[in-house]
Amino acid sequence: MPASILAEVGHLREAASTRDTTVRLICPSCGSVHVAQVLGDNGGISYVCTACGHSWS
Image: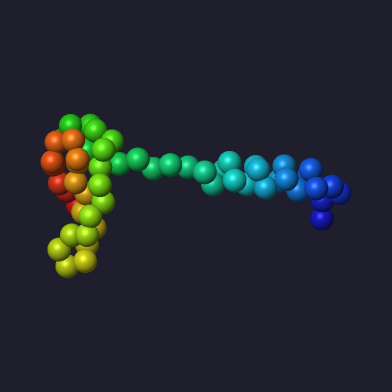
């Protein structure tokens, strides 16, 4: 157990920084990051680029 609340806050901050990652999808056609996730046929997941209209799954 930490000796102080500051030690506990520091520990929580370190844990949050290691979890805080962002994954961005990039359109394979135009390279844009403006990608929407949509429900595809048969319940699958598909992606659509809102910049160029390219879709993939």
